Length: 379
Length: 125
Ligand SMILES: [Zn+2]
Image (cartoon, rainbow over all chains, first blue to last red; front, side, top):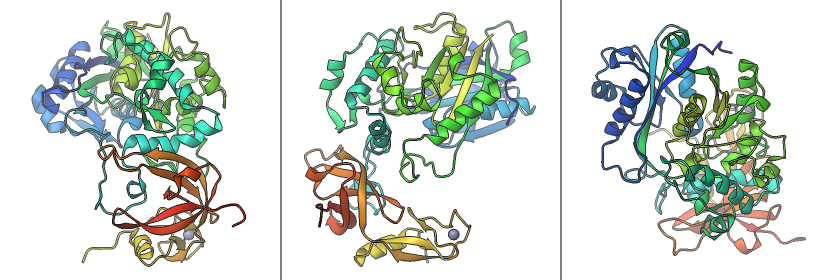
């Protein structure tokens, strides 16, 4: 177990979130990054580490050149994509706490909507036979819906329950000017009228918003951040867990598909690392590539008791006025799909007191992914 | 010569009309999807063994190919096998899809490829 807690997120930056940026991915990446560096009150010469995840296509060298970073001494990539997005903060903390870097830039940018959509079919007639695509799982929506269905069945949840959840996410988004669905709240009836994409699990409004854009963070030494006189958001804990048997995407082969072992183990490790409990979390973001991802993580992180997530959703506990506010930016469903990192930016805003949906007196934020999670604290 | 992929035996079996899985030569653990080594004991010696071809539907979804929306959808299922394995398949008779339904594998052509599909088995059959 790492002795984390000695780093702070000192800067955040994000481009506009659009459906067609008309720009190169690197220009988006550099814009978000430059914004994060300026937000931290730093200069390019202060950045000595670069971290992203393996699905990001921006080269460290090209970004260094675009930003004019005089010397990079540390680079790392967290595995895969969004569900492990917050592992980047663990890699940054590992570098800083071991003295290998002072200020690490975390970045993610893509033209995910206009150039390389994840939601497009990855299989067509004549492709090589395999165990999933050949049998009809050709889009992420189908892949995840089949994996999440046993959990939803076990909890007695239907697409209407997911609709009640999406209504809450969209209520947050409606009040966030950066959100794709700014000013566009929906009712349960609107949700239930949106067309089936993967019946009987996911309708159109259950999907995240494929987006062009970039987001970036600066992670710094806690002592330096405190001495700067600027807002300090401390990384109290950050963990990743990959239990044997849990699989990316096609997570079908462990015996018990209802118990989210990876998420539960991340949560346990976070509480051990921070000395906190779920009851002390003031505000959360949960990785929501699909609406059906939220209930599993909400329960997995212990934001309700086991088996109680359906009741929490039906009581409106995740939306405005609820007891466990989740995705106050609107999440990936309501704000934008920046592969999970825009949810981390919202956690930082909540700890700074600058969210458009600010939770009063919020001092502890949980940034929850499936195989990784992070706890932030306001100082 | 290109090395065989770990899953080639499965598709060679399908082309002969057989549904196969890897069985560890050292500890007899079955595995699917195919893997290079046995996670239970570490052995990389294995044999392909035939499965019973029986199973039960654990969950299912309706899958529409997004760029071929006018074609029939497919009912994609998670299937629990009596051997303790789980497979993804698609149901030939989707009107009978229900969780817990007994199914039998049927190797059949779909879109020009031989695939391990499933069909529900009526009670008592
Ligand atoms: Zn073995």
